[in-house]
Image (cartoon, rainbow, N blue to C red):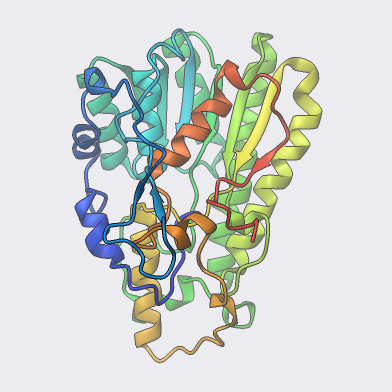
Length: 357
């Protein structure tokens, strides 16, 4: 659910994604859109702005103002080295850029080699310090390689954002074609293929485990603590229809988070997870295309999975807009930073109030 929520809300997701530059954008384009480091706003602005035009039924309605994409806190990660998996697109991309702007040495990891490398190249061009490791985080060799890159290039490892994940088994570099890909697409258990189940569980659950294993081994060897943030989902806090492998894998991510928090607290290593609802990213747009094509194929839903689709803040927004990547990244980086010193073992519902009501 971190990148998907679909319903008859009247919100043109594709046009909105285009307007914010998140559809088929390269890493360099996103870095440019976020703005150069010196453009960081000193003021985050107001908490909210009034509906325009006003709601004729509910007086005084307000839209929350999202944190700007180019906001960062100078020097917060100075001297620190961070791994970001899934750095090629969406939240991982923006997290890598912001970490570098806050002073971190960044190791970006993604199986989308061209797009991931473009993000890292854009960071270096801007004056940041970053290297790229291409590969699938469900492979032990890739996880070991990303930690080795951190040690060999920057001398160690301080914090990790385990963000890489998938919703289905369709290769992310391929265009959506439900007719030929339906055995790889999300579906109910009775309709699901082994390939759908195996790929999503391998990347999301096994990939998070193998990433954490490599990261924790290095942090233990260093003896100076650290912070790990795993990207889960509200699908890891409750159930969602039609996505059994995704739901199971994100519950696994939250379980791994709690397990690791217990085992590594004595060594100064904190582990938390973030569980977002609808977040406007390329993965969101891709999943929306898949479900749209599936509906056009004649596939029929019961409708029960769509009884609730909006968070409190999404329902309150005039455009019924979900959260933006910068809003999620702000929480991720806070949890990665030493500022969150008393926080571990938590599965934060960064979902706009979705699981509250």
